[in-house]
Image (cartoon, rainbow over all chains, first blue to last red; front, side, top):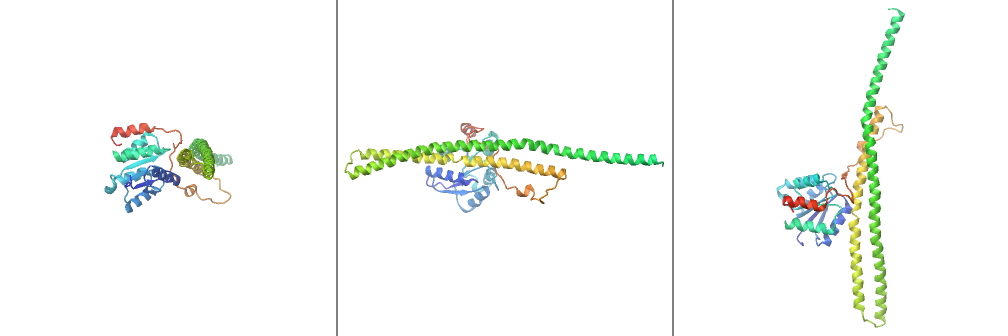
Amino acid sequence: MADLKILAVDDSPTMRRIIINTLKRAGYNDVTEAENGKDALAKLKVHKFNFIITDWNMPEMDGLTFITTLRSTEEFKSVPVLMVTTRSVKDDIVEAMKAGVNNYIVKPFTPDTLKQKIEQVLGG
Amino acid sequence: MSVADTLQTKIQKEVVALSDSISDLVKSFRKLRSPLAESQEKVPQATNQLDKVTEQTEAAAHKMLDVVEEITEREGDIIKSLEEIRKSVEDGQTDGITDRIDSIIEKANANLNDAFTIMDALQFQDITAQQMDHAAHLLEDVEGKLTGILSVLGVRNEEGPEKPVEKRKRERAFDPHADFVDKKTDQRDIDSLFDETGKS
């Protein structure tokens, strides 16, 4: 837990604060924010992260494009990604799976669900 | 050519010109039909989204108020208990103080949990922001089509040229189905999807 460096990607500043607070409650204190996929990629070039939580609908670069770009880059191919989004249509979930997400939560989420999914992804 | 023939030719030319004008007018009105029909659909969609924002904001506000009321009641109890403990200590009566302190700690922890409940409920802001972005997008679309219709009809803005709709629009990223309550797929079904592929 102490070693996990998380990148939290969401265009909503409120949602980023909620995610960061929820992660801290769960014991994950090393969290960096990014406001869209483009910002996230820029931060990935400079810092090392071993877990990514990302939204889908974001301006400049959405979550799906971000994940697709990530998975096509040798360096970030295997970084675990958890998608946290309002999109709940089954086709969207399948599309995200094909793009390479490791797990998926629909907003609004509970703190227990977020913690559980992180542990599942890390354990799996 | 006789006067009658000349007149007839003139009348024929005028009738042809009138027929061409009517034909052009009909074509212009046909061009209006599709954007008008689309606009008619989009305005109620925008209104529905705004109604959803009102409902879901109100529901979230009530939920938070319920929690705040419980917190303030407990805080009142905590303050009262601390005052009683202070008096007891001043009077040199320390029997049962540990139990009273334990009770305060329990109430304080309950308040902490409720504070987090409020924080979690604030997720409504992200969801309603997307609903409003969707409504704004629909209305911008309608505005664009109405501007197009006015242009076909040859109506000019008397106040002078306005910035075109396309240039005034800001980039909007939203889920048109974003909802605080209704989810199209349950978390359990999402989990099953991932279990099936062996990803979780």
